[in-house]
Amino acid sequence: MDSVVCPDTVQMRRVTFFAYGKKRNSLRGQPLKILPWDDEVLATKPNVTEYMLDKEAHTVSYWKSKLDPSEAWTAVFVTGHKYKLSWGNTGIDFEKMRVTLSERWEEDDLPVIFVHNYTDARANFTVKTSDGQQYLNNTIPSTDLENPHPDLMPGQWYFYNGSELLTWVINGKQSADKYSEYVINIEGIRKVKENKPIEEKETEEEIRFWSDPKSWPNETLPKFNDSVYVESGWNMVYDLVEPSPIFAYVEINGRLEFKSDQDHHFRAKVI
Image (cartoon, rainbow, N blue to C red; front, side):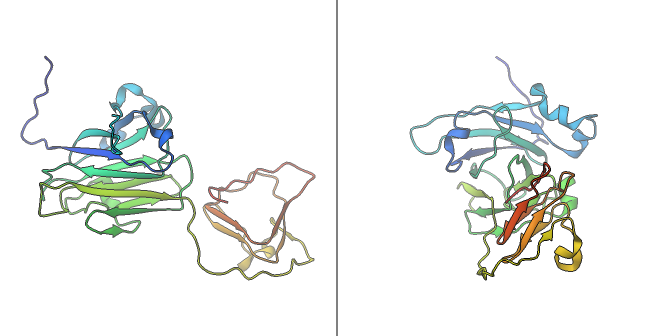
């Protein structure tokens, strides 16, 4: 019978992923794929994209069906390391995910950092823990993304729209009772809702051309990763010939028309 012998310097802890949101069928039955993602590992890879596509480099945790709602994936991780997690063959985005740390996590456990890529845009995330803690984005210092610091707290996270990578932390610093499970709930938000009312205005007669800086506040054209607003009352014509920058968010409250004598390539993560 095969076996694995670990020195006492290696610490391993169990994590379960379940309650994966409304679109259950998209993840139901799909394998969880685990890829070592430490910076020193990536530094040895001449092509990170090829590394991500290498099936032999992944460890696979298979989905287990149960009679209760806790249909789940369970895997064991070595603490003090980073792992990139993906579902299915192409990497399926999850809208919601509930993560349970098994009993016996200790206060002095090193953190584990998980990284998920998103093929679909997310404007924000909520990450809540079972003890009521909710951290905001960028609560993981950038230096700790490279070298996980022992003082990182479970539920701290970092998300950058430019790379579409969600990074978050687990460890044992959550409860004095190490015999109870600890839960982290993650939800991806497609659009940040604004509570301010929109004042409706009559559409102006003069045309604003997208390519004209004078059409925009501060006479500045929208650029990569900007949030772009076509305000109520504006009469905007999109006339760019080259593909647009990839905007983070576009909200149209006025009129936006595409010039009809040419093709256009308008790119945005959320419209």
